[in-house]
Image (cartoon, rainbow, N blue to C red; front, side, top):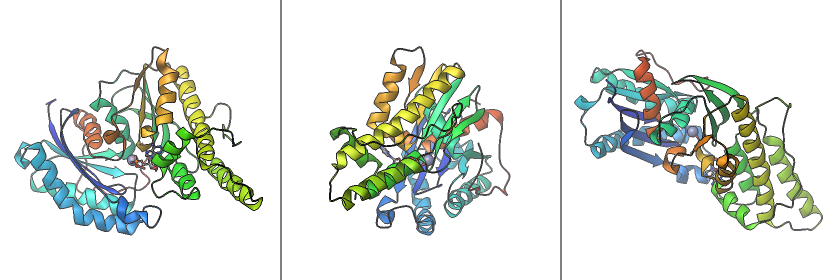
Amino acid sequence: KDNEIILAIETSCDETAAAVIQGGNQVLSNVIASQIQSHKRFGGVVPEIASRHHTESITGILEEAMTKADVSFSDLDAVAVTEGPGLVGALLVGVNAAKAIAFSHQLPLLPVHHIAGHIQAARLEREWNYPALALVVSGGHTELVILQADGEYEVIGQTRDDAAGEAYDKVARTLGLPYPGGPQVDKLAAEGTPDVKLPIAWLEPDSYDFSFSGLKSAVINTLHNAEQRGEVIPPENVAASFQQSVIEVLTEKTKRAAEQYQVKQVVLAGGVAANQGLRQAMENMFASSSVELTIPPFPFCTDNAAMIGAAAHVQWKKNITADWDLNGVPDLTL
Ligand code: KG4
Ligand code: ZN
């Protein structure tokens, strides 16, 4: 059956999300409860608070997803859930909810990798054109992934320290902006001139890995040193310079990988795909090439369950199901 209806659940970090997806690309419902307000005063996600909120929200979110999609449990063909990576206590809430529904309604349980979810958000837009390359940039991940066929992921590069979004959030905090600061650094950057000298970590010439902690530290040191000298560097110029460094390394490595692997499609996914500067730079980079650039709509870029349902469709077609002992795996590999 190709037009299967899947209930998908995502609780890997700080969003409690459920969605109903038909045939891998029709979003019948997509519901999210964000916890940002609860974590804001701590300047980041507090794992224990995240788990508690998931526990409080999950039942209501599931009901809402089913109601909005106008389906009943007997209409479902499978239940999908994010298995990992993520915060273990947070993952377990989703995994147990999925198991309970699947077990009680005798439905197959489909385990989904969170990054596969971010990548498969692209299929909510259009069919894959293989070989393809995905750049996944979010608060928790920075990865370059090659896809040769459905569900075959090869990670060719990843961050060795901070994720891109994490670096944005830390720079935002240094500039006195509230969590999550990525969107605000993006806005500020648009008003500034990139005239602050900051490093770019290219790493080994043939490496597709990334490193953002040196850049983040350079921003902190530059601001600190200026303060010591009684100087003020316009924050918009700091933001513009930081953003330029991040975008340059992300786009250059993406372009090099696209050439080396002769890809037909490039996907930009994850929360940082909302970044105006990055979107523009990616569009410019592939505008005059035959490579098709796909950037999923923003609600499917940040953590959501529709993307988990889209990725679950691939598992469904391959008949990859989980047993009742499915666990949340914080460091699950793709
Ligand atoms: O995908 P996501 O919602 O959650 C994770 O899986 O991590 O990504 C959230 C991250 C945060 O770090 C946030 O600051 C960043 O995406 N972000 C941005 C922008 N919008 C969100 N970073 C830079 N520019 C933006 N416009
Ligand atoms: Zn994510």
